Image 1 (cartoon, rainbow, N blue to C red):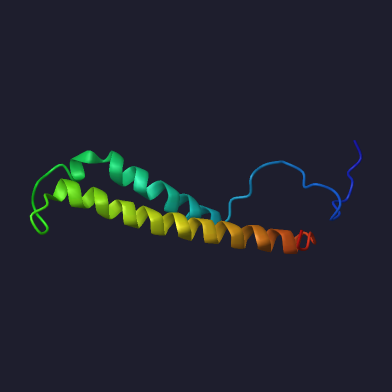
Image 2 (cartoon, rainbow, N blue to C red; image 1 turned 90 degrees about the vertical axis):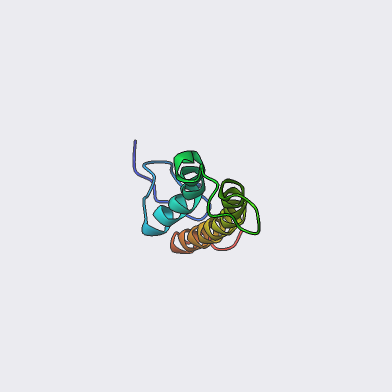
Length: 94
């Protein structure tokens, strides 16, 4: 099969995923909350209490806020990465 050049009208070929430092950071942002919540032994205790709330509960609620921030960061980085890839490939704004 002859190798055809990719133009803005031609869809990108699917191949081996490109691993870049930005994509590694995105993956870490999305993976961190799962690791933190699945490692129950690290927060299955009552002390230190915060305003009378045991550590077990306020730690999980804190991760709700942290997860939101990490997800927003990952989304922003992903959009920036996609915009840069489209610009590099000559796709322009679509």
